[in-house]
Image 1: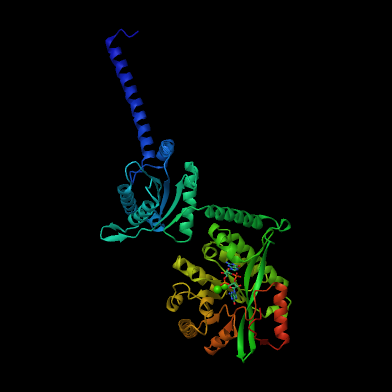
Image 2 (image 1 turned 90 degrees about the vertical axis):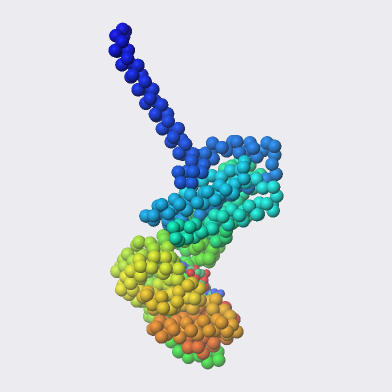
Length: 490
Ligand code: C2E
Ligand code: CA
Ligand code: CA
């Protein structure tokens, strides 16, 4: 058709252009593939590459059959995540590059290293013996966690490592990775540098999952189906003494701390230690905490007309996550406006870890709660890293001396000194100080002798149900506020 040479020339050019375009697309595609298979910062192979290599790796592990292989998952600490999210991305990239490079230097020929996620590295190592595995593991951790020099400063790097073993822990990569990941989770949870997978970890994880499902069901199910009503409020008296003789105490006031219990349909009555950490970790503490405030308001409503019950003030524990949730103040505000809940008679107990996460934001929230009329208490005092002077920045009105300092009174002179100085400084700063976990007469006498007139503990009473609390308060009033102190009251 194209007899004209000019047209042939044009056509050739067109075809060539088209070829170039196709080549360009192909190049870009392979470039994309290459980029997917190689991390931009560390230049190490990625998860996509691992996926492609899996068959080869497993084949090499089974032909000829190797003794064992270690799958190690290394996760850098949160400080690197913070660096990643800061404006200084160059600093983050430099640290990642350095760590990738250090690992690469360590990995012997024929073994594998991947950069599987921004903070996660995967090493597959074939040890000659369990001794060489231990040495290698220590070396990996040592190299990864050596500080990285950045200009004139050093970046601290923390890391955790989880390890599973082929073929002991699994014969597929999915299984081995899952188990290395579970081990890593355990290492992180227990603040350990590394953890080697063991079957108990899987059992623990399965129990955790089951408990999580139960907790979820208990929270979302309607009360008719057992939801929320599975939880119950207990009340532990917090008393103020006006006098103490050998075995008789005169009480000036009775207050109570609200403590949650879970009536698990199969497991029976569960204490907070068995489910609150999971609730806190998974965020379920937020609906649970909210339910607790509403339930407490209903309790107040029920007892509105009861003069004895009305004389009590209460404390409610607030966990760190609850304090960072955006609607805590709002929920409390609504309850104060619409229910029998009285701010002045509801102390919020916080732990030190609540205060220092985001001190500025926390201070603002605490100021707001204080303005709304809620007294604030610092629980477990002495177990964190607060000094009395930095507590002063927060609108706290009560300190609870942690039970660990009370337990060994009066014998332990160090604890005596700590309790004594907390009492003195607390009082000098106008704070009310209460000792918790008082179990013996000797502890009570010692505390009273040091000027501590506020006490909570099994010596006075265990946590009680609503009706038990009622009886307790009635009994004390009936006895003219006298209380017989007996060592094995419980
Ligand atoms: P906590 O606030 O320090 O509460 C004191 C814990 O010590 C309670 O355990 C109480 O039963 C126990 N206890 C009281 N007197 C004595 C004593 O004389 N000796 C000994 N050995 N122990 C004593 P419980 O009820 O198991 O609560 C454990 C923790 O769970 C509480 O520690 C608190 O941090 C948390 N918690 C309990 N209820 C709630 C809640 O409703 N919300 C939140 N956020 N946390 C809660
Ligand atoms: Ca408490
Ligand atoms: Ca406490």
